[in-house]
Length: 245
View 1: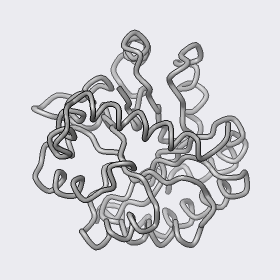
View 2 (view 1 turned 90 degrees about the vertical axis):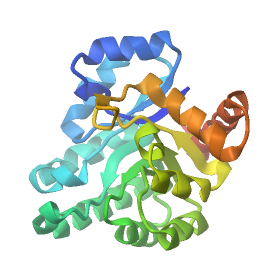
View 3 (view 1 turned 30 degrees about the vertical axis):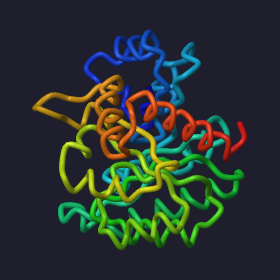
């Protein structure tokens, strides 16, 4: 199983959650919300060969953590994964929009300067500005649009741009999420949990709950669950081969 977007450090018991991911032999991309969280989060998985830790600066924290951009740049050579980054167009964050854009553009510039990174990207209510920034920052690496919720036109633009997508049980629980997913290229989709933030049936999702996303994808693609899992593994190998170690 593959969880391409989980906040391991933010579970109630991060160490136990990480150990369970290892026991189940999951591939997990452990994302961070600030550069200062990276070292401690990476330490959780220091002996886990299938867990990678991404360097992030979440758009919802861009205003208060913009001073950590220097640390972000210092850490960047230590991981080929970046996230969670992006833009958030929620009305409650309107006052931080200019800072969000500047921080996101600077991160894309940094990624390009080091030869590109695999990036997991937040685009809530901001799909078009995110796609604009990615187009302007061409060369920053492989962009994975996490829990994409844009319009059909924005989705087509993302598909045409060659971007990837990660989908999880919470997204696939709704008709709109399933419809968007059905229109994504089958060979550019990966699964995610977005735990502990994402929930289904009133409980936080854990990385191993991506099995629910595998089942939903099997239905959408009209294949068996084993075939869906094989496709996802092929996709992961293709994604991780884009940026050299």
